[in-house]
Structures are given as C-alpha cells and as structure tokens.
Image (cartoon, rainbow, N blue to C red; front, top):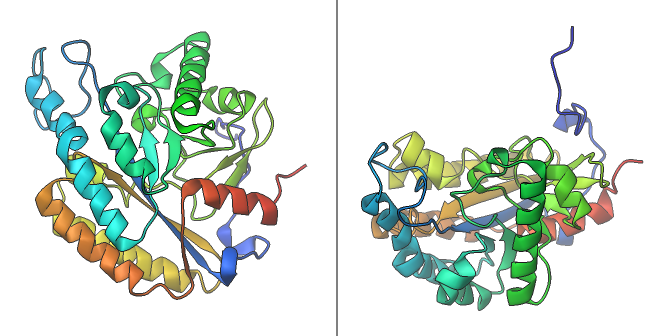
Length: 295
C-alpha cells in the first residue's frame, strides 16, 4: 500500500530529465541567500537559541538575533559586495519597520527580495488557512510597498509551510517557493492556483543547521560550502545543478564566521568557469523559459 503523499509532484530521478543549460551555457547556478529576521520581545517564543527554555523576557536569545540586524548583516553585505555576488534577501516583513537601514544596505547591492513571512515567531503551520492567507497578503503588500514590485518568491518562517501554503502562494501570484529541500534542480509543483516552482534551498549548506543544530564550526561551514561547490560543479558536467547557500545575519555575520565564509566565497569566485552567480528569482525565471510547467 502506498504511503500518504503531498500530491504536489511525482518522483523524478535527476538522471532522466530533459537537458537544459543556464544562461551563457553555464552548468552550475549558485546563489547566496541572506535571512533577515525579527522577533517580538517578551511576547511568545524568541525562536531557537543556545539556551532554550529560558523564561520571558528572553533577552539573551532576542539579543543574539538582534545582533544580525545591528551589526552582522551589514558586515555580511560588505562581504557579498566585495565578492561581486548579488544576494537573495529573505526578509521578515517586520524588518522594514524595525531595521530599514539593513534592507537599504542590501537594496544597494541589487538584492532579489524573497518574502519570508511577517516574523519568524509566526509560522504557517501554526495558523489556520484564513489567517495564513491574510499573512501572505500582508507580507506581499509590505514588500511591494517598499521595493516597488511584489516578491516573486516565498520562504516560510522556520521552513515550516502548512498543507495549503503552496496553494495560497499560487493564488496570490507568487512564482516560486524555497520551502522544499528536495533536489539540485528546480521542480514544478501542482497547486489549486496553478503551477508553482520549487527552487532548491538547502538544509545542509545552511548556517543555521550547521551552527545551531549540529554544533559545527566556522571552519566546518567553509568546508561545506567549498566541497559542495566543487562536487556539484563536477556533477553539473552531466546535467545542470543549483548550489544554494543559506546564511543568517546573526550567524554568518559573526566576525569569526565571516572570515571563514569570505574564504569560501573567494574559492567560488576564483573557479567561476561554467558557473552562473545569480539569485533564486532569476533561477526561477530562466528555468520557466527552458522547462515550462507540465500540462
């Protein structure tokens, strides 16, 4: 008997798909995601922390996150600017009111803005459908108001979409989601609002699981980024691949980690033959032209 399924897409091995290429004949697409997040103080869970279970107000863990908005995020922006890599910016909509200067620093780099919910203290899987619909609409309007155009992509706070998140996104005009770490190529998903693209987003090449869940070091993350790049570049000779690298302002933005991350980016940019450094949104846009959604 078959196990229960999400019903969004069929199984498809990467070895049996039609060939395509990234712009300029590149075989590997690389993007760097920067998560800018904000949490309420003394009102609900402050999210993950090194010291879980602390009573409210949890000043220590709130402040750890806030470091990224005040210092770490700007240092990370400088690093990406110097590397020549245009960032993909995942924003909690509340950041626009709380830390507008931080968003402006990434806007100056031409960042591709992805909706990342209202606040990471509020996750889709904790909401009913009507509340989730209102949240998505509120976030879309906020980004459009500040950036001049609506966001093309979505990443759920906590990477925790509900059973209907993809339906609601398609109904509100979103083109892609980063919620499904399932593949090294984009994947078309079925929703009641029409096709929605899943663009690769990493659980492994992601500073949050590396540093917080797996207690890895800055050196570990450097090696993960470099080795993933080298391996996927080799694999992409057979079929195109995507390398997504996920960072958070309060994690990779820490000075000791930033130095190691800068070394990793230096390796990537010095081995750029056959590589397209891009954004999640541009990956989705190009993939749509070479692999239209299934009928």
